[in-house]
Length: 466
Ligand code: ARG
Image 1 (cartoon, rainbow, N blue to C red):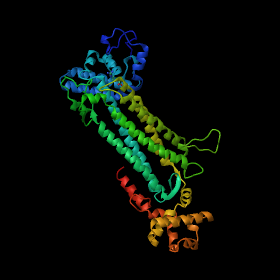
Image 2: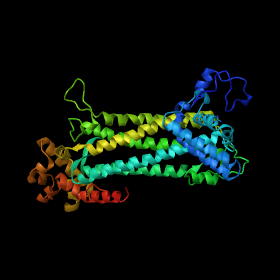
Image 3: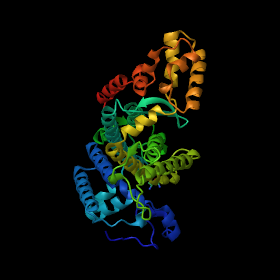
């Protein structure tokens, strides 16, 4: 598009009372077209719905509406095919589209902005964009959960050490560990669904802040744009950005979950742990050390959390001091959300690929599961159940058995019965049945526990909901 404005002349959209155009620096700080051109499809959809409603209500003529809709569709294909010249002098996506419409269809273009303002227009465009992003995120999380469900099923019986303080605690199954992430990402996905519920109201028709005297039909535009209903307060509508903050907040929580998983993958894939091997597709080599295989994707997923947290804090800070209603500060909302959305999408997709491709070293996991006296609690529980000891006493007896095994350099299950009986006479050879890691996990059948039978129930629960 030819740029009809120059720096000397005033703005063709709002320049009526201005004798001269903006200073070059003013233009630079004011313009948002560099990033809000991302909203072009939403802007055009919103304008088509608005013009259609204006004609339906007899506010503009059907002929003008037809010209407007046709012109807007032309602009849509121009932008989609890369044949649209964005102009910084026209500030933002709204004025770039409208100026082009004027070139294409003439004076009828000037009727489109009846009964609306850029304030409700930008609130609409951005809501539509965030809503679509939330729907994408919901699908990405569903894919990630599906990947974990498959791995959990495959490894419902695979024993690994469970950790607290990153110290070996009790044996668990790898399936159970996978299902912990299914719970986390399941909650993330329900936060996404709630966020969609919250923002599903149409802003258009709130105008600058006070509503309008034209006989518009906001229910009609809300319906045409796929919103549940129109917003109920015009002042709130043009000043609200909590739908964007809610997106950033749920993105930050989800990124935190992804980052914990990334950290585990980094640890598990070290030669020292050797629990998992990353596929070639999701790792890199070192340019100097030929033996290395680095978990770069996991590290970058971990790092994206920092950016997403930053975006959340940035937008909270931008908004916190603003009086109602619209202030130009709010123009700074978009880059934060665009950046966080891109990071989150990429992080979830990369994690889904890594989880699907991960090779699990079941032998290493099992060997590690049995080390560090991980079945000590099982010995104590046996003493409570079979010998009637109070748990505190059983804990003490077990502590002595662990100390003895440690001094002999063996596992609990390798202590001779006579040694165990010297510590507590009630111990019989039946105790050896609970000292293996398999027996340990199989016994933990409490609801939500690590027993393979229990993990399979939880997999079935989530399969029915994914
Ligand atoms: N580019 C602006 C933004 O993103 C659009 C709204 C401008 N409204 C105004 N009254 N200046 O917030």
